[in-house]
Image (cartoon, rainbow, N blue to C red; front, side, top):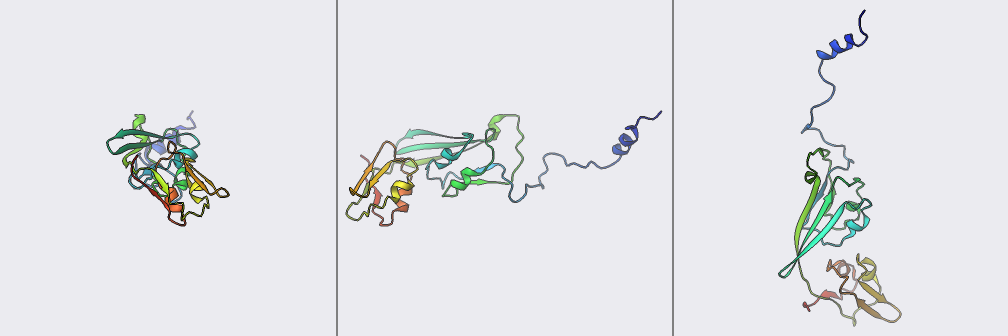
Length: 185
């Protein structure tokens, strides 16, 4: 009596495999595939928006004070990441990109961390030339940390220095260009 799978086993022993060996360097993910994260720390303004929109909290930020500023390390943990691409969508500077690299097999979890360290110079205190300010509130609405308060009716502009991360987003959004960083206090 012949076993039903024996014929198929002999056939498969002499045919080419239908799969490819891993890793296959010439294989890529499809165009819209969201794979490994690529982070360009040089263009990052450290606004923190990526951390705020990351649902699985896979992005962490640490800072180390050094002379003249701070070293900021942003780390993306691909073991927690859902590869939704929201961090890349919200990054106005284009510092975060989703690649088509799907080769994410590792024996050490440290191999699945993407990080970048950048030096952030202390830019000083954010100031506003109130004589030219129209109190439109664009600076306040674009501050990722909520460090600004603008009262259009009372014509006041207040900065919470403890919250300000000196990203400069408010300066870029000001229509009258009256915001700037002043000398360090």
